Length: 134
Ligand code: NI
Image (cartoon, helix red, strand yellow):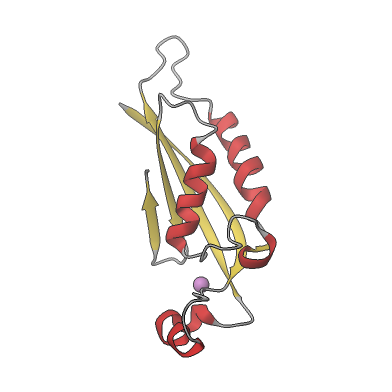
């Protein structure tokens, strides 16, 4: 088993809010992330693909293709967007770091050969990050 990781980055705004809760409960629970005029994060993404090395090429997966896939499917979709307002994925889904990681994993999982294990690491701040692998 060998793994390769591709790093990427996007900036996005969000607001954490549960429409089923009162304003007071949302403010109390989500704190600054509930700010009704939104706020931004510089998200760092690490996508790790694992599997068996292809002996003939010496590659696990073409990193250029992986980078292009992340750019097309993730960066172009989320970079410089308001996740709540500009994306269909978070129209009815609270854009927590956890949910963003799951959404990204689901998008990539459909595009990456099932023979590979896939893991997504999403850094929301320099101190907080989420890992999801299905
Ligand atoms: Ni936030």
